[in-house]
Every structure is written in C-alpha cells, then in structure tokens.
Length: 339
Image 1 (cartoon, rainbow, N blue to C red):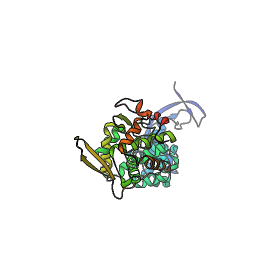
Image 2 (image 1 turned 135 degrees about the vertical axis):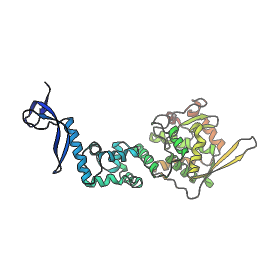
Image 3 (image 1 turned 90 degrees about the vertical axis):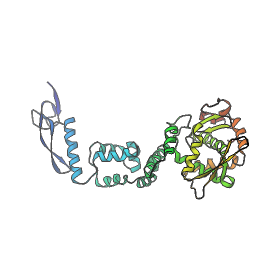
C-alpha cells in the first residue's frame, strides 16, 4: 500500500486521491481551486506533494491576476526576451536569483518587486539598471548582457551584425582571448584607436596589426582580450576575423562610426583606408582597456603598415603558425614589439 507523510498526523499514512474544489489561502485571501489532491485517510488533510504544489500555483496565479501582478509566465517571458539567465537578470535587477526563480515558478512577488520587474519591459531602463548594478556581474557577464539588451533597443538589427555575431561570437577560449566577441566593443575600440592616430585614419592593414597588438597585450597583462576576436595567419600578418575582416569594418561603417575610402592601386588591388567619422564616440568604460588601446596607438601607431607587418611577422604568434591557421592567444606571453 502506498503511503505519504502527513504533517498533521506527523507520520506516514495511507491516502486517497480525490478530484474536487479546494480552498487555498494566499496572503489572507481564500481562492477556490479545482483539481486532484491526495488526502490523509486518518485526518482528511491535504498532503503536501506535487499535486498540492499544482493547486497552490494556480491559487497564486489567481491572486496575481486579482491584484494586477505579473504572472510567472510573464516574468519569464521578460527575461528570456533578452536571452538572459536567471542569475544575470536577477543581478541586473538587484534581487536574489533564488527570489527570481521562485517568482518564475509560481511564488507571489511583492508589489515593489513587481514594479521593478515591469521596468525591464523598457530595454533602455534595463540598461540603466545594468549600469547601476554592474558590480554584481563579472566583466564578461556585463558585456554579454549589455550586448543582449542593446539588441532590443535597436529599431532593426542589420543582417551584417547578425552575420558577424553568428560567425564570431564563440564561447571564451584560447582563440578569442577568453572573451566572446561583441560588435559594440569592436566598434568602440576602432573609434578609440582611430582617435589616437594622426589625422584619425589608417589603412586597413595597419588597423589589423594594431588590433592584434591591443588584444594580445591585453591578454598578456590582464588574462583576457579586449575585442574577443579570433586572429588568423595571413601573408601580411595576423588578421582579425580572417575572411570576415572586411565585414567587420563594413559593420562599423554601417553604424556611422567610420568612413571607408577605396583606391585602386597600379597592381589592380584595392587599397582601403578607414577614417573616423565626425562625432563618433568610443564607449569603453574599462579604464585599463582604454590605457592599453592608448599605449598601442601611441607606441606603434606612428609606424606604417609595412613596418607593422614586419614586426608582426617576427612574433611567435605568426612564426609558429601556418597560413590560414587560427592563432592562439597563448603566444601573447612572448610578445616582442610591445611589452
């Protein structure tokens, strides 16, 4: 015979399963809920098990509806619309992840918490909360959350942006400097870097090498890259994104941060020059990242594309890899051109 523990009798007891209406009290209010429940044969009390949890959840939802509170499903939909985990969403709101988990699975939130969660309907307001509670997140989690929320603020996500995210946004590894690629971070780095160069422009080959030194110096000194880009061994040196390198700059141009000028050379090749647009803003909140970008720009930015290519060819990152091979950030330990 099956038995269940009865908290009223304080012992395992035989039970009977009934289908009927049950009165469930939530915060001093009683709600009539229909459904199956297991009753103790000795005292007739409802036994607390999965069936009772189901009745309780329905009573909670009835209470929420009566008082105009968000349902558990609505709370979950707000969070998942930003592709955020429970831990990250709770940290952004400034509440405990255990509390959020309870609200998403049926528990009744307080009115102040309900108002707070409702604010997340507005992506711009959620970005404000992200900045307020930034210290509750790791730098990696902060960047990823900011990227996800910004996707909702844009009137339309360009196909080029979606393409770059799909192709380059990998899990942290030795090939992206233990950081996931972020189009917004790349855009900000380009703006900051160009602003430090004479006349605020540079040939694309020169930018390739400066980005390489920024990311690898960052990994050497801080244990993580700045952009989260992969670098590939190409004839002129390490290239960010490999075959997607031109797409990267086209995206930044599409965003209005840079202008791209093309000039046909005598050998038939196209020379591309990247110039900072007027009024472009470099949003890089991390002071250490700003320092690394400025240091590379001020130290190596005065060199030409050929000189920088020659320097990069002398790095272990290039000498110990083959054509078209991805370059591991572990080679940053022996960086020579800048230390």
